[in-house]
Image (tube, rainbow, N blue to C red; front, side, top):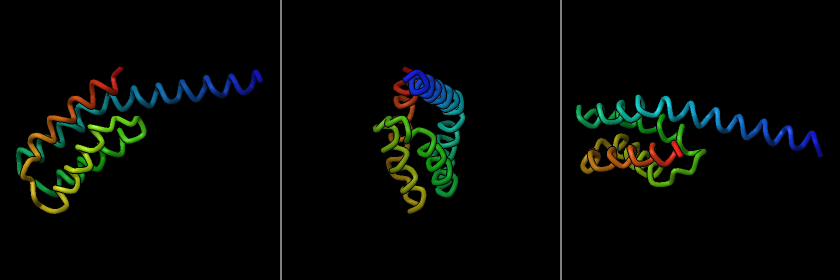
Amino acid sequence: MRGSCSRSMGIEGLVRDLAQLVIETMPAQITAVETAVDARDSAALRAAAHKLRGSITPFRVSGAVEAARKLEEMGAAGDLNGADALSRELVGGRSVLAR
């Protein structure tokens, strides 16, 4: 039983460390999305949103994950209508993850 507890605490610590890393890198990732949206650069938006979505998906921040998914699809399609509003939703996801 003791070994199981140690592994559990180790996994929890790993998850906390990973969450902290995501919290620390998320502002730069959101900035990359916002920069791509502002520049109307669909290829850069697809790449930035994909990277961000991959970072936050394990933490089940559903609103932000869905916004990143939609932004990625918009970038892939080359249609950035509505991208401004979706990029603002990502900021809310950051505050949820920080809890």
